[in-house]
Length: 114
Image (cartoon, rainbow, N blue to C red; front, side):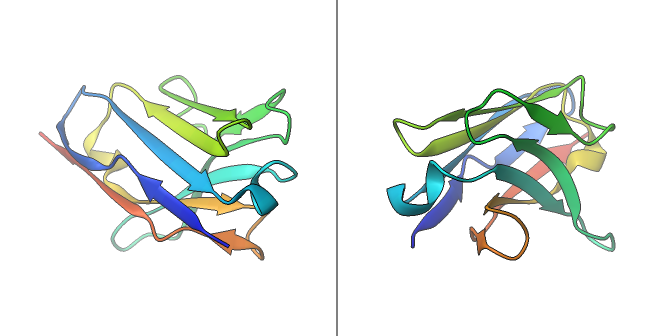
């Protein structure tokens, strides 16, 4: 099973980034995809999730109007479009397939500077 997150980096407040999560075909298509984040000194937070067919998505209230999760099942890839980034969005973002007890990617660091 391969699961890889990418797209993190350093961005200024108000900027945008798009994260990608690529997974092997054997696990991607039939599972919910979620993005979590780990911020220093804080508990892991579920940022966004998307249903198997992409027909439903859910968001943490703090990002709902700024982040958009999507998926391309043909490419076995999910995305997290992040706009109007704020300093509190600084974290390691992790991709999860199939729920917390299933598959995790290695994480990608997002740093928002003021």
